[in-house]
Length: 189
Image (tube, rainbow, N blue to C red):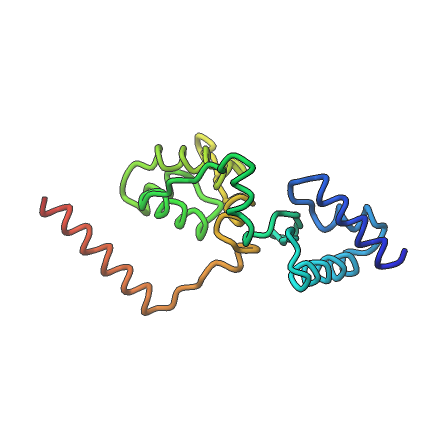
């Protein structure tokens, strides 16, 4: 199969599916190996950017998805109803951060780290589609394990969890001091 035909097939699949499609499924559709398929997809991604197209192909943790070019969002909302924006409060962001870095994680583990009940925060993050149930812990009561979703990756513009920022010892010490000061303020009240 020539490259031009492979590109047309991949574009057709990604456009039609709407959601992300794993590299292995795309490779199977082309009857090509994953390395070849991935190279074709990355070539297409570069071409879409170079040609300033209205569409983009993005990679989400080993899967690929076609989406609109974010540059043209303001024009898109003139035609479509405005997508629902998440109201990510400090509590939700704190909970989501813990879950992103510690996943898979139970709600009880999140509460242990935060020091407060997290029922509402976890429920809202599930409702927003940013986290989901990924299994059950093999412990008494078999608590639910949570992890982030593709929507989380899309929302924060990262390709995979490996792209999450890493924190050095200085930043960790600063965070620890801020947490201790916050705890002291709560105790003083």
